[in-house]
Amino acid sequence: MKFLRNYWYVAAETKEIEPGQILSRKILNESIAFYRTKEGTLNAVQDLCPHRYVPLSLGRVQGDDIECGYHGACFNGKGQCTKIPGQDTIPDKANIKSYPVFEKYNFVWVWMGDPALSDDTSSMPDVFYMHDSDEWDANVGLMESFPAYYELLNDNFFDLSHAQFVHPETLGGGRLSEVFRKTARPGKVSSLAENEEGCVFEVSENKVLTEIHVLDSQLSPFFHQVMGKMKFGQENYEGNLDWLLSIEWHAPCITVFKPFIKPAGAPKDEGFYLSWQANIVTPETESSCHYFYSACQNLALGNDEVNKNLFEAFSFAFSQDKVIINGQTSCLSSYDFTQEELKSRVTFPGDQVTGSCRRVIAKLMAEQERTA
Image (tube, rainbow, N blue to C red):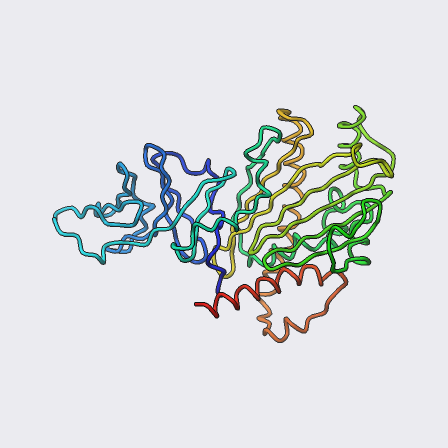
């Protein structure tokens, strides 16, 4: 399996790597040792000592270097071997690979392609700006690694038709899945008027935007409870709601949800964003990936209870997705389908939206191979 290389990938949450500590993580089939010097400088090098092939992450940080825990060879943040105990000369083959690394939006990002191109930060979408804003509370706190090909998660995040059946308590209430299945069409997302029910998806070179409006509907209890507490100071809002949902997918694997609710028929200034949720998937191997989640809200700044409740609700929704994705992965592994069989599978309404993400990746992959 080949991956898109010239992109910044999320490797960790910033808080995962403390000064003087080492974190080992496999990204795109490459084991990387992330470490901070005691002064806090972040480095990323190949997690492998070239002497006896021991992971450097089993060693320790010594000054600005990482020291192998087996025989004491030291390597700096550029991958250069700076010390071999017992000898003065250091052969060039003792050097190891290093990776451009960057901290932004409470995440550690690593560049997996040509280092000369790493100044291009366009693969860090600006949808994360809320993390650096005093006007939003940023809640970063879920990181999991599990056995699933990363494009299965891309499919899941963009496939709103499953919400009715997998998330009936949270995201699947009301007519979201029905509207998605029956009305999804390609076009400019701006063409969907605020008071128009429907779904439009817009495909560009390296991203897919989707806008879906579910109007005058009873949604899941979760949405009515939030509306009641945040807007009316009561336990529940019993009236119908309008749900305006924007989704941004950025190649290769970042999906951002912006759910907005308001009382049915009310002007937009009487509603609010529940949160902005970032779902970030970083391939680990051909058959496994790392998942990072963050939620930002400006409903109740500094309110720990609101932050906790929102985060738990959407974390619960992802736990439901995990059951499906793990089962799907198991079936795909067991049946060993050919590519032709996979291409000729049964398709349902709404698959055109999820398929658009895969087509973007395939096109970018072909371009990468052409210019290699």
